[in-house]
Image 1 (tube, rainbow, N blue to C red):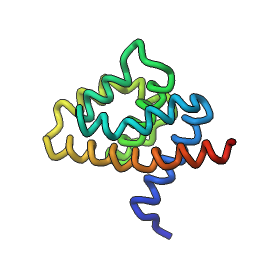
Image 2: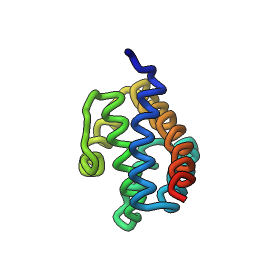
Image 3: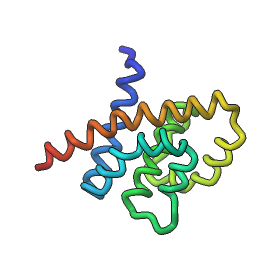
Length: 130
């Protein structure tokens, strides 16, 4: 049985939202809820750089990892383990910098689609845990 693209995104997002909420709770939820607006206003690369900042919280680092892992899996076919995405941040940013504009837009669109699911699931995870 073949899964739809939305089912694949939803499965990733459920995994990310569950782990993010379990480890960071409301802070992860707030970041996940605000991430799409940040991407729309600032762009994908500035948003990733913001989450990667050395003074950023563990929740921001976790969301950064989730986004890089999710984008790598969905668009590059690389199944990264938790924690590997944040470690690959410099290489990921270099690849985005060198990409064609159509490829950069594809990554941006995919990030927004993945975040759409994560935003919904952080509420469900919180409601279930309460």
